[in-house]
Image (cartoon, rainbow, N blue to C red; front, side, top):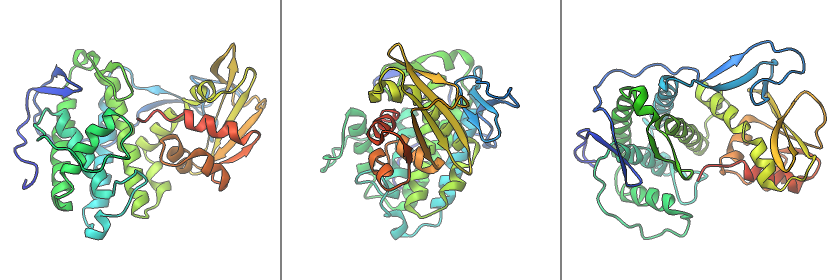
Length: 338
């Protein structure tokens, strides 16, 4: 490739100064995207299974596959393929469409994804300091901005070429990890450390959210973007953060919040505050003191920090029955994307 330099796969993965031994990738074709959640169908009426999330047909949505990350890796591969398809025919105006991320256009988002996978492969990143960092909020944001800004002089074609190459190598590397390697601890972008397998799941969130960033900037159908196995999985996992939203959003003892997601991915979940903690509640019990309704796209944009919760409520994108200020705080607290 013309801009990214030598992409020979190294034997070590680096993240936040910690190196983990990983197998070198052997190039193979990508797999098709697979489901990342087990779904238990036909629960008893009014029952709560797992964390209490019911889809539109009454099915309870459970947890990600525990013993293998293959479905998650396949889901990331499918996101990469869709991002590639969205960007392959872009002209310069398309590459420079602004996204919901401050100071980032479409090319910056694709450059971020490609450069981050390059870093995770252990490839050298030349020293670079961006001129403008007023929008950067934390050390991880500064690292991302340094890598994105270094690529701003590249053409869109070169940014996309790096994205294709580094994501392909990284996906193959991840598919070659054994279960012991998946259990190894690595630094988490959310703070602390997580198992390598959990880190891969965090990467899926990043891809799904950035796929929406790009599609929104290009004016594409966002309902179609979320109605994919990866989109449905991330939506369900975001909904599982409702108890956290109550706890960190300042909900008082006894508060019960119901959250309804509309078509094309109808879901209902609920949580309450008990003994000072946010806990899952029966979404079918009908005891909510605060009720929120949103489309899956709007909820995912708010829950990923791309859209302000209070603004979404004020303009009617999120419909609230009850305390709108509390609802905005809960939505804000549900965001765990740094």
